[in-house]
Length: 237
Image 1 (cartoon, rainbow, N blue to C red):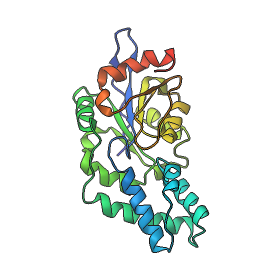
Image 2: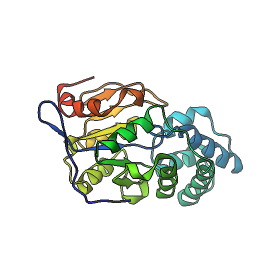
Image 3: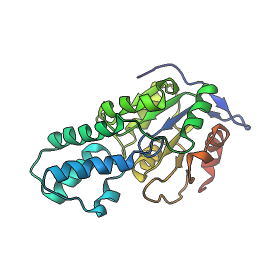
Image 4: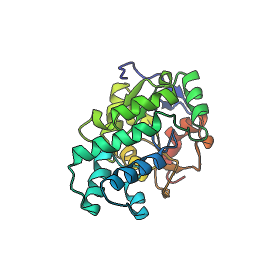
């Protein structure tokens, strides 16, 4: 789902404008990070390798290619990256077709952004087939634009996904709020010049300049996101 419709700005008290909101998928809007690990463990068990839980923190939140390549290296399994990616996506899709649980506060936040006509993009490192399947649980009507990991040459932690989303919505990156749950995604948003809200799901994310760390999406609403456009310039939150 793509769009070139210019962003509808939402103005803060001092006149600054929130032009768009960019939301990550896995671990941010939907509680599926455990699903990915289960799929990886299942696939590698079928290949004769039991994954150590220590690898979980390494692969969480990363793009499929990076995680799969890492697991090939540490296990020494005899399979190509494209072959493994097919197996992992199939195992994960089998799980999410049964439905996915939304993170606390996700449905309310999406409804609020839609009600106020705030241009919202779903920006994920997951493959397009995964993103499209999860839209059934999230509601495609909430998004002006969706970007998947295989829609671009470079995905997170590179800034390309967020720069592309801003360009397609006609928005300035510094006027777009990013919501992410992993350091990989946070790094991508910050590299694009966006104020970032970190909602850690599996591993901690430290505070930093231009970054706001919260415990749950239940702490995030439209006034909060509007405030980031000016407050993020002031430093750590």
